[in-house]
Amino acid sequence: MYNKSLQTIDKTAIIIILIFCLVIGGLIWGEQWCGTTCSFVSKPKVKEFSWQNQQIGIEDRAFVLTFNRPMEIASIEQNLQISPTLPGKISWAGRRLAYTLTVPIPYGESYQLQLQGGRERSHQSDQMGVVMQPFVGTFKSRDRAFAYIGTNQAEQGQLVFYNLTQKKKFLLTPPTLNIVDFKFYPNGDKILFSAASKNRGIQGLTELQLYQVTTGLDQDLSKPFEPKIEVILDNKEYQNNQFDLSSDGETIVVQRLNRSNPADFDLWIIKPGTQPKRLNLPGGEFLITPDGQTLAVTKGEGVAIVPLKPDTEVLDFLPKFGRVLNFSADGAAAAMVNFNMENSRLRYTKSLFYVNNQGIQKELLNIDGSILDCKFNPSGSHLYCLLTELLPSKDYQEKPYLAKIDIKTAQVLPLLELPNYRDINISLSPDGLAILFDQILTSNNPSLNDAPVSDAGEAIIGGRLWLLIPPTREGTEVTQPDLEELPLVGFHPQWSP
Image (cartoon, rainbow, N blue to C red; front, side, top):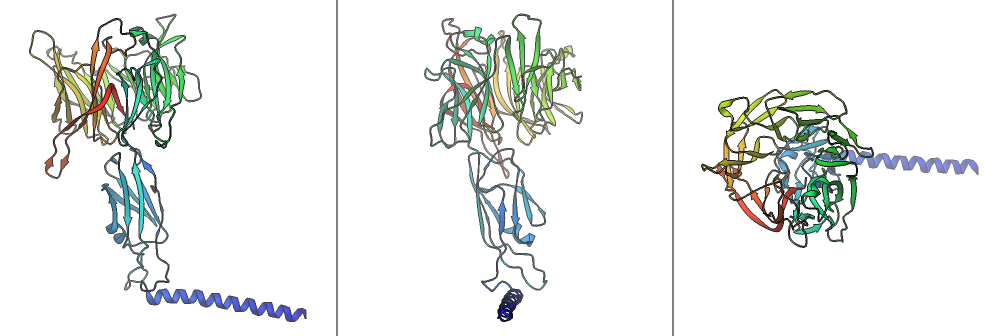
Protein backbone atom coordinates (compact mmCIF):
# COMPACT_ATOMS: atom_id res chain seq x y z
CA MET A 1 0.00 0.00 0.00
CA TYR A 2 2.82 2.37 0.98
CA ASN A 3 4.80 1.64 -2.18
CA LYS A 4 1.78 2.22 -4.38
CA SER A 5 1.14 5.66 -2.79
CA LEU A 6 4.80 6.60 -3.23
CA GLN A 7 4.73 5.53 -6.85
CA THR A 8 1.60 7.62 -7.43
CA ILE A 9 3.24 10.72 -5.92
CA ASP A 10 6.40 10.16 -7.95
CA LYS A 11 4.42 9.84 -11.17
CA THR A 12 2.45 13.01 -10.38
CA ALA A 13 5.65 14.98 -9.66
CA ILE A 14 7.28 13.77 -12.88
CA ILE A 15 4.20 14.74 -14.90
CA ILE A 16 4.15 18.24 -13.35
CA ILE A 17 7.86 18.71 -14.07
CA LEU A 18 7.36 17.63 -17.69
CA ILE A 19 4.43 20.05 -18.08
CA PHE A 20 6.53 22.97 -16.75
CA CYS A 21 9.40 22.05 -19.07
CA LEU A 22 7.05 21.98 -22.06
CA VAL A 23 5.51 25.35 -21.13
CA ILE A 24 8.91 27.03 -20.64
CA GLY A 25 10.26 25.51 -23.83
CA GLY A 26 7.16 26.56 -25.72
CA LEU A 27 7.46 30.13 -24.52
CA ILE A 28 11.12 30.34 -25.51
CA TRP A 29 10.49 28.74 -28.90
CA GLY A 30 7.39 30.88 -29.44
CA GLU A 31 9.18 34.13 -28.72
CA GLN A 32 12.04 33.20 -31.07
CA TRP A 33 9.61 32.07 -33.77
CA CYS A 34 7.13 34.95 -33.77
CA GLY A 35 9.28 37.84 -32.54
CA THR A 36 7.06 40.89 -31.98
CA THR A 37 3.90 39.48 -33.60
CA CYS A 38 2.64 37.37 -30.70
CA SER A 39 0.51 39.07 -28.07
CA PHE A 40 1.35 36.58 -25.31
CA VAL A 41 5.08 37.57 -25.31
CA SER A 42 5.85 39.85 -22.29
CA LYS A 43 6.99 43.31 -23.35
CA PRO A 44 9.89 45.41 -22.10
CA LYS A 45 8.81 48.34 -19.95
CA VAL A 46 9.91 51.19 -17.71
CA LYS A 47 10.44 49.66 -14.31
CA GLU A 48 11.01 52.92 -12.42
CA PHE A 49 10.91 56.68 -13.08
CA SER A 50 12.74 58.60 -10.34
CA TRP A 51 10.65 61.80 -10.72
CA GLN A 52 7.25 60.08 -10.87
CA ASN A 53 4.68 62.25 -9.04
CA GLN A 54 7.49 64.29 -7.50
CA GLN A 55 7.81 68.05 -6.96
CA ILE A 56 11.10 69.23 -8.47
CA GLY A 57 13.25 72.18 -7.40
CA ILE A 58 16.31 73.96 -8.73
CA GLU A 59 18.61 71.48 -6.96
CA ASP A 60 17.14 68.54 -8.94
CA ARG A 61 19.14 68.37 -12.15
CA ALA A 62 18.56 64.81 -13.47
CA PHE A 63 16.04 61.97 -13.52
CA VAL A 64 16.57 58.25 -14.13
CA LEU A 65 14.46 55.78 -16.14
CA THR A 66 15.11 52.13 -15.25
CA PHE A 67 14.03 49.43 -17.74
CA ASN A 68 13.34 45.77 -17.02
CA ARG A 69 15.43 44.68 -20.04
CA PRO A 70 18.36 46.00 -22.10
CA MET A 71 16.95 48.46 -24.61
CA GLU A 72 17.84 49.64 -28.10
CA ILE A 73 19.35 53.04 -27.25
CA ALA A 74 18.50 54.88 -30.47
CA SER A 75 14.83 53.88 -30.37
CA ILE A 76 14.48 55.11 -26.76
CA GLU A 77 16.22 58.43 -27.33
CA GLN A 78 14.20 59.13 -30.47
CA ASN A 79 10.86 58.45 -28.79
CA LEU A 80 11.38 60.12 -25.43
CA GLN A 81 9.16 63.22 -25.13
CA ILE A 82 8.75 65.75 -22.30
CA SER A 83 5.96 68.31 -22.36
CA PRO A 84 6.51 71.23 -21.82
CA THR A 85 9.99 70.87 -23.29
CA LEU A 86 12.91 70.48 -20.90
CA PRO A 87 16.29 70.63 -22.71
CA GLY A 88 18.75 68.04 -21.50
CA LYS A 89 21.33 65.39 -22.39
CA ILE A 90 21.07 61.60 -22.11
CA SER A 91 23.56 59.10 -20.71
CA TRP A 92 23.28 55.35 -20.17
CA ALA A 93 24.47 52.83 -17.56
CA GLY A 94 23.18 49.35 -18.45
CA ARG A 95 19.38 49.40 -18.21
CA ARG A 96 19.33 52.90 -16.67
CA LEU A 97 18.83 56.09 -18.67
CA ALA A 98 19.86 59.37 -16.98
CA TYR A 99 18.46 62.65 -18.34
CA THR A 100 20.40 65.69 -17.11
CA LEU A 101 18.81 69.11 -17.55
CA THR A 102 20.94 71.68 -19.36
CA VAL A 103 18.81 74.59 -18.08
CA PRO A 104 17.11 75.04 -14.68
CA ILE A 105 13.56 73.73 -14.55
CA PRO A 106 10.99 76.57 -14.84
CA TYR A 107 8.86 76.84 -11.71
CA GLY A 108 5.07 76.67 -11.58
CA GLU A 109 4.72 74.02 -14.32
CA SER A 110 3.30 70.49 -14.57
CA TYR A 111 5.21 68.09 -16.84
CA GLN A 112 4.43 64.84 -18.65
CA LEU A 113 7.01 62.33 -19.88
CA GLN A 114 5.94 59.95 -22.66
CA LEU A 115 7.83 57.02 -24.09
CA GLN A 116 6.34 54.66 -26.67
CA GLY A 117 7.76 52.90 -29.72
CA GLY A 118 11.07 52.07 -28.04
CA ARG A 119 12.41 48.58 -28.59
CA GLU A 120 14.24 45.93 -26.63
CA ARG A 121 17.80 45.26 -27.73
CA SER A 122 17.66 42.24 -30.10
CA HIS A 123 20.25 39.47 -29.85
CA GLN A 124 19.72 38.58 -33.49
CA SER A 125 20.98 41.05 -36.08
CA ASP A 126 18.31 40.12 -38.62
CA GLN A 127 15.38 40.74 -36.27
CA MET A 128 13.98 43.81 -34.53
CA GLY A 129 13.55 43.84 -30.77
CA VAL A 130 10.18 43.64 -29.03
CA VAL A 131 8.34 46.99 -28.86
CA MET A 132 8.08 48.26 -25.29
CA GLN A 133 4.95 48.84 -23.28
CA PRO A 134 4.00 52.58 -23.57
CA PHE A 135 4.90 54.65 -20.52
CA VAL A 136 3.54 57.97 -19.23
CA GLY A 137 5.05 59.70 -16.21
CA THR A 138 4.12 62.97 -14.51
CA PHE A 139 5.94 65.42 -12.26
CA LYS A 140 5.82 69.13 -11.49
CA SER A 141 8.15 71.91 -10.47
CA ARG A 142 7.75 73.89 -7.28
CA ASP A 143 5.17 76.65 -7.19
CA ARG A 144 6.39 80.16 -7.85
CA ALA A 145 6.29 81.74 -4.41
CA PHE A 146 7.90 84.57 -2.49
CA ALA A 147 7.73 86.44 0.81
CA TYR A 148 7.71 90.13 1.60
CA ILE A 149 7.11 92.53 4.51
CA GLY A 150 3.64 94.06 4.53
CA THR A 151 2.94 97.78 4.79
CA ASN A 152 -0.84 98.13 4.75
CA GLN A 153 -2.76 98.43 8.01
CA ALA A 154 -3.72 94.75 8.23
CA GLU A 155 -0.20 93.47 7.48
CA GLN A 156 2.10 96.25 8.69
CA GLY A 157 5.55 94.91 9.53
CA GLN A 158 4.44 91.29 9.19
CA LEU A 159 6.03 88.60 7.05
CA VAL A 160 3.68 87.70 4.19
CA PHE A 161 4.03 84.55 2.06
CA TYR A 162 2.48 84.63 -1.42
CA ASN A 163 2.07 81.58 -3.64
CA LEU A 164 2.09 83.19 -7.09
CA THR A 165 1.20 79.95 -8.89
CA GLN A 166 -1.94 79.35 -6.83
CA LYS A 167 -2.63 83.04 -6.04
CA LYS A 168 -2.82 82.40 -2.29
CA LYS A 169 -1.49 84.61 0.53
CA PHE A 170 -0.62 83.81 4.15
CA LEU A 171 0.46 85.94 7.11
CA LEU A 172 3.33 84.12 8.79
CA THR A 173 4.09 86.35 11.80
CA PRO A 174 1.99 88.01 14.51
CA PRO A 175 1.07 91.73 14.39
CA THR A 176 3.20 92.36 17.50
CA LEU A 177 6.48 92.03 15.55
CA ASN A 178 8.18 94.22 12.97
CA ILE A 179 10.24 92.13 10.53
CA VAL A 180 13.62 93.59 9.55
CA ASP A 181 15.25 90.89 7.38
CA PHE A 182 14.66 87.26 6.39
CA LYS A 183 16.21 84.32 4.52
CA PHE A 184 14.55 81.21 3.08
CA TYR A 185 15.67 77.73 4.05
CA PRO A 186 16.69 75.63 0.98
CA ASN A 187 13.36 73.84 0.46
CA GLY A 188 11.24 76.96 0.93
CA ASP A 189 9.30 75.31 3.77
CA LYS A 190 10.80 77.59 6.47
CA ILE A 191 12.08 81.16 6.81
CA LEU A 192 14.71 82.54 9.18
CA PHE A 193 13.97 86.15 10.13
CA SER A 194 15.01 88.95 12.48
CA ALA A 195 12.37 91.04 14.21
CA ALA A 196 11.69 93.38 17.12
CA SER A 197 8.58 94.30 19.05
CA LYS A 198 6.42 97.06 17.61
CA ASN A 199 6.19 100.56 19.09
CA ARG A 200 10.00 100.70 19.28
CA GLY A 201 10.68 102.67 16.08
CA ILE A 202 14.37 102.86 15.14
CA GLN A 203 15.26 101.66 18.65
CA GLY A 204 13.92 98.27 17.59
CA LEU A 205 16.99 97.74 15.40
CA THR A 206 19.03 97.25 18.60
CA GLU A 207 16.55 94.71 20.02
CA LEU A 208 16.38 92.14 17.23
CA GLN A 209 15.85 88.45 17.89
CA LEU A 210 16.17 85.61 15.35
CA TYR A 211 13.12 83.44 14.67
CA GLN A 212 12.15 80.56 12.42
CA VAL A 213 8.69 80.13 10.87
CA THR A 214 7.07 77.53 8.60
CA THR A 215 5.65 78.70 5.24
CA GLY A 216 3.28 75.86 4.33
CA LEU A 217 4.87 75.50 0.88
CA ASP A 218 5.15 71.73 1.36
CA GLN A 219 1.57 71.36 2.62
CA ASP A 220 -1.85 70.98 1.00
CA LEU A 221 -3.04 74.57 0.61
CA SER A 222 -6.68 73.48 0.43
CA LYS A 223 -6.47 72.78 4.18
CA PRO A 224 -6.12 75.40 6.95
CA PHE A 225 -2.50 76.37 7.57
CA GLU A 226 -1.16 77.58 10.93
CA PRO A 227 2.48 78.79 10.79
CA LYS A 228 4.77 77.58 13.58
CA ILE A 229 7.24 80.13 15.04
CA GLU A 230 10.33 79.30 17.08
CA VAL A 231 12.91 81.62 18.68
CA ILE A 232 16.42 80.79 17.43
CA LEU A 233 18.48 83.50 19.16
CA ASP A 234 17.42 85.96 21.88
CA ASN A 235 18.70 89.50 22.55
CA LYS A 236 19.24 89.36 26.32
CA GLU A 237 23.03 89.71 26.48
CA TYR A 238 23.88 90.65 22.89
CA GLN A 239 22.54 92.94 20.22
CA ASN A 240 21.95 90.94 17.02
CA ASN A 241 22.69 92.70 13.75
CA GLN A 242 23.32 91.27 10.27
CA PHE A 243 22.87 87.52 9.74
CA ASP A 244 23.25 84.99 6.93
CA LEU A 245 22.00 81.43 6.34
CA SER A 246 24.00 78.79 4.46
CA SER A 247 22.53 77.35 1.26
CA ASP A 248 21.98 73.95 2.94
CA GLY A 249 20.19 75.56 5.90
CA GLU A 250 22.60 74.02 8.41
CA THR A 251 24.61 77.11 9.42
CA ILE A 252 23.66 80.59 10.65
CA VAL A 253 26.21 83.37 11.13
CA VAL A 254 25.21 86.44 13.16
CA GLN A 255 26.99 89.71 13.86
CA ARG A 256 26.61 90.41 17.63
CA LEU A 257 27.48 93.24 20.03
CA ASN A 258 27.82 92.69 23.77
CA ARG A 259 25.32 94.97 25.53
CA SER A 260 27.55 95.48 28.58
CA ASN A 261 30.83 95.73 26.65
CA PRO A 262 30.66 97.59 23.28
CA ALA A 263 34.25 96.51 22.53
CA ASP A 264 32.99 92.90 22.29
CA PHE A 265 31.90 92.90 18.65
CA ASP A 266 32.13 89.54 16.89
CA LEU A 267 30.61 87.04 14.47
CA TRP A 268 28.87 84.01 15.96
CA ILE A 269 27.97 80.66 14.39
CA ILE A 270 24.83 78.61 15.11
CA LYS A 271 24.42 74.96 14.14
CA PRO A 272 21.28 72.83 14.68
CA GLY A 273 21.14 71.35 18.17
CA THR A 274 24.15 73.30 19.47
CA GLN A 275 24.73 76.50 21.42
CA PRO A 276 25.92 79.63 19.54
CA LYS A 277 29.72 79.92 19.36
CA ARG A 278 31.78 83.01 18.70
CA LEU A 279 34.11 82.86 15.70
CA ASN A 280 36.53 85.44 17.12
CA LEU A 281 36.27 87.16 13.77
CA PRO A 282 35.23 90.83 13.97
CA GLY A 283 34.42 92.35 10.62
CA GLY A 284 31.90 94.20 8.50
CA GLU A 285 29.59 92.81 5.81
CA PHE A 286 29.77 89.05 5.25
CA LEU A 287 28.34 86.20 3.17
CA ILE A 288 28.49 82.42 3.67
CA THR A 289 29.89 80.71 0.56
CA PRO A 290 27.54 78.25 -1.24
CA ASP A 291 29.40 75.20 0.09
CA GLY A 292 28.68 76.34 3.65
CA GLN A 293 32.31 75.85 4.68
CA THR A 294 33.78 79.35 4.46
CA LEU A 295 32.85 82.96 4.99
CA ALA A 296 33.65 86.05 2.93
CA VAL A 297 33.91 89.04 5.28
CA THR A 298 35.12 92.61 4.80
CA LYS A 299 38.07 93.42 7.05
CA GLY A 300 39.68 96.84 6.78
CA GLU A 301 40.37 97.56 3.12
CA GLY A 302 39.76 94.12 1.71
CA VAL A 303 37.76 90.89 1.76
CA ALA A 304 38.92 87.88 3.80
CA ILE A 305 37.93 84.27 3.04
CA VAL A 306 37.82 82.41 6.37
CA PRO A 307 36.86 78.83 7.35
CA LEU A 308 33.64 78.64 9.40
CA LYS A 309 35.41 77.43 12.53
CA PRO A 310 36.37 79.42 15.62
CA ASP A 311 39.93 80.80 15.79
CA THR A 312 41.00 79.74 12.29
CA GLU A 313 43.40 81.52 9.98
CA VAL A 314 42.39 83.43 6.88
CA LEU A 315 42.50 81.25 3.75
CA ASP A 316 42.76 84.15 1.34
CA PHE A 317 42.70 87.95 1.45
CA LEU A 318 41.64 90.16 -1.44
CA PRO A 319 42.82 93.70 -0.62
CA LYS A 320 41.47 95.09 -3.88
CA PHE A 321 37.80 94.74 -2.99
CA GLY A 322 35.48 96.43 -0.51
CA ARG A 323 32.28 94.38 -0.92
CA VAL A 324 31.11 90.91 -1.89
CA LEU A 325 27.70 91.13 -3.56
CA ASN A 326 26.88 87.55 -4.49
CA PHE A 327 28.28 84.09 -5.26
CA SER A 328 27.47 81.91 -8.24
CA ALA A 329 25.37 78.84 -7.41
CA ASP A 330 28.37 76.49 -7.56
CA GLY A 331 30.51 78.81 -5.42
CA ALA A 332 33.21 79.02 -8.08
CA ALA A 333 32.80 82.76 -8.67
CA ALA A 334 31.75 85.97 -6.93
CA ALA A 335 30.68 89.47 -7.85
CA MET A 336 32.78 92.02 -5.96
CA VAL A 337 33.08 95.81 -5.82
CA ASN A 338 36.31 97.81 -6.01
CA PHE A 339 35.89 101.39 -4.74
CA ASN A 340 39.04 102.40 -6.68
CA MET A 341 40.64 104.07 -3.66
CA GLU A 342 44.09 102.92 -4.79
CA ASN A 343 43.90 105.06 -7.94
CA SER A 344 43.41 108.79 -7.41
CA ARG A 345 42.25 109.24 -10.99
CA LEU A 346 39.37 106.79 -10.33
CA ARG A 347 38.68 108.01 -6.79
CA TYR A 348 35.01 108.77 -7.34
CA THR A 349 34.15 105.66 -9.36
CA LYS A 350 33.31 102.07 -8.52
CA SER A 351 34.17 98.94 -10.48
CA LEU A 352 32.28 95.66 -10.64
CA PHE A 353 34.54 92.61 -10.83
CA TYR A 354 34.00 88.96 -11.64
CA VAL A 355 36.33 86.93 -9.39
CA ASN A 356 36.64 83.13 -9.61
CA ASN A 357 38.55 80.39 -7.84
CA GLN A 358 41.00 80.09 -10.74
CA GLY A 359 42.54 83.46 -9.91
CA ILE A 360 40.67 85.45 -12.58
CA GLN A 361 39.70 89.01 -11.60
CA LYS A 362 37.80 90.54 -14.51
CA GLU A 363 36.45 94.11 -14.46
CA LEU A 364 32.93 94.16 -15.91
CA LEU A 365 32.12 97.85 -15.60
CA ASN A 366 33.32 101.12 -14.08
CA ILE A 367 30.75 103.76 -13.12
CA ASP A 368 30.56 107.05 -11.24
CA GLY A 369 27.28 106.01 -9.63
CA SER A 370 26.78 103.10 -7.23
CA ILE A 371 26.75 99.30 -7.50
CA LEU A 372 23.99 98.39 -5.05
CA ASP A 373 23.41 94.70 -5.70
CA CYS A 374 24.07 91.92 -8.23
CA LYS A 375 22.63 88.41 -8.64
CA PHE A 376 24.13 85.57 -10.69
CA ASN A 377 21.75 83.72 -12.99
CA PRO A 378 21.56 79.94 -12.32
CA SER A 379 24.19 79.05 -14.95
CA GLY A 380 26.58 81.77 -13.76
CA SER A 381 26.85 83.28 -17.25
CA HIS A 382 25.17 86.64 -16.47
CA LEU A 383 24.63 89.08 -13.64
CA TYR A 384 21.47 91.04 -12.97
CA CYS A 385 22.52 94.23 -11.21
CA LEU A 386 20.93 97.19 -9.46
CA LEU A 387 23.07 100.20 -10.40
CA THR A 388 22.77 103.97 -10.17
CA GLU A 389 23.76 106.73 -12.56
CA LEU A 390 25.14 109.99 -11.14
CA LEU A 391 23.04 112.85 -12.49
CA PRO A 392 24.77 116.02 -13.77
CA SER A 393 23.57 118.46 -11.12
CA LYS A 394 24.96 120.46 -8.21
CA ASP A 395 23.08 118.29 -5.75
CA TYR A 396 24.41 114.74 -5.46
CA GLN A 397 21.58 112.75 -7.04
CA GLU A 398 21.59 109.21 -8.39
CA LYS A 399 19.10 107.48 -10.69
CA PRO A 400 18.76 103.71 -10.15
CA TYR A 401 18.39 101.24 -13.00
CA LEU A 402 18.43 97.48 -13.56
CA ALA A 403 20.94 95.97 -15.99
CA LYS A 404 21.93 92.56 -17.33
CA ILE A 405 25.67 91.97 -17.69
CA ASP A 406 27.25 89.26 -19.85
CA ILE A 407 30.24 87.97 -17.90
CA LYS A 408 32.04 86.63 -20.97
CA THR A 409 31.80 89.80 -23.06
CA ALA A 410 31.26 92.37 -20.26
CA GLN A 411 28.37 93.76 -22.33
CA VAL A 412 25.93 95.78 -20.20
CA LEU A 413 22.26 95.73 -21.26
CA PRO A 414 20.10 98.28 -19.35
CA LEU A 415 16.69 96.76 -18.62
CA LEU A 416 14.69 99.33 -16.70
CA GLU A 417 15.10 102.84 -15.29
CA LEU A 418 13.81 103.35 -11.75
CA PRO A 419 13.26 107.07 -11.11
CA ASN A 420 12.32 108.21 -7.59
CA TYR A 421 13.23 104.85 -6.06
CA ARG A 422 15.02 104.48 -2.71
CA ASP A 423 16.19 101.48 -0.67
CA ILE A 424 15.38 99.09 -3.52
CA ASN A 425 15.61 95.33 -3.01
CA ILE A 426 15.89 92.94 -5.95
CA SER A 427 15.43 89.16 -5.99
CA LEU A 428 16.08 86.83 -8.94
CA SER A 429 13.85 83.76 -9.15
CA PRO A 430 15.59 80.38 -8.69
CA ASP A 431 14.95 79.46 -12.34
CA GLY A 432 16.40 82.82 -13.46
CA LEU A 433 13.25 83.82 -15.36
CA ALA A 434 11.86 86.67 -13.22
CA ILE A 435 13.01 89.53 -11.00
CA LEU A 436 11.11 90.96 -8.05
CA PHE A 437 11.79 94.49 -6.79
CA ASP A 438 10.08 97.06 -4.62
CA GLN A 439 9.33 100.77 -4.34
CA ILE A 440 8.82 102.13 -0.82
CA LEU A 441 7.17 105.25 0.58
CA THR A 442 8.71 106.66 3.78
CA SER A 443 7.97 109.33 6.38
CA ASN A 444 10.16 111.03 9.00
CA ASN A 445 7.20 111.48 11.35
CA PRO A 446 8.57 110.39 14.78
CA SER A 447 5.10 109.30 15.95
CA LEU A 448 5.04 106.35 13.52
CA ASN A 449 6.71 103.88 15.89
CA ASP A 450 4.57 100.98 14.71
CA ALA A 451 5.93 101.09 11.15
CA PRO A 452 8.98 99.18 9.81
CA VAL A 453 12.15 101.27 9.44
CA SER A 454 14.13 101.93 6.23
CA ASP A 455 17.92 101.88 5.89
CA ALA A 456 17.85 105.65 6.38
CA GLY A 457 15.94 105.28 9.67
CA GLU A 458 12.61 106.55 8.31
CA ALA A 459 9.24 104.90 8.84
CA ILE A 460 8.09 102.81 5.86
CA ILE A 461 4.42 103.65 5.31
CA GLY A 462 3.84 102.12 1.88
CA GLY A 463 5.34 99.77 -0.68
CA ARG A 464 4.73 98.60 -4.24
CA LEU A 465 5.95 95.27 -5.60
CA TRP A 466 6.94 94.74 -9.23
CA LEU A 467 7.63 91.66 -11.35
CA LEU A 468 10.05 91.99 -14.26
CA ILE A 469 10.48 89.28 -16.90
CA PRO A 470 13.95 89.96 -18.42
CA PRO A 471 14.47 89.58 -22.17
CA THR A 472 15.27 86.11 -23.48
CA ARG A 473 16.65 84.87 -26.77
CA GLU A 474 14.38 82.68 -28.90
CA GLY A 475 16.44 81.65 -31.93
CA THR A 476 17.57 84.88 -33.53
CA GLU A 477 14.85 86.95 -31.81
CA VAL A 478 15.24 88.70 -28.43
CA THR A 479 12.08 89.31 -26.42
CA GLN A 480 11.33 92.65 -24.77
CA PRO A 481 11.33 93.05 -20.95
CA ASP A 482 7.88 92.60 -19.44
CA LEU A 483 7.01 94.66 -16.35
CA GLU A 484 3.98 94.07 -14.11
CA GLU A 485 2.91 95.68 -10.83
CA LEU A 486 1.66 93.02 -8.43
CA PRO A 487 -1.62 93.51 -6.52
CA LEU A 488 0.28 93.39 -3.21
CA VAL A 489 1.39 96.10 -0.79
CA GLY A 490 4.80 95.67 0.83
CA PHE A 491 8.56 95.73 0.42
CA HIS A 492 11.72 93.59 0.54
CA PRO A 493 10.44 90.74 -1.69
CA GLN A 494 12.43 87.49 -1.78
CA TRP A 495 11.75 84.44 -3.98
CA SER A 496 11.38 81.04 -2.38
CA PRO A 497 14.14 78.59 -3.53
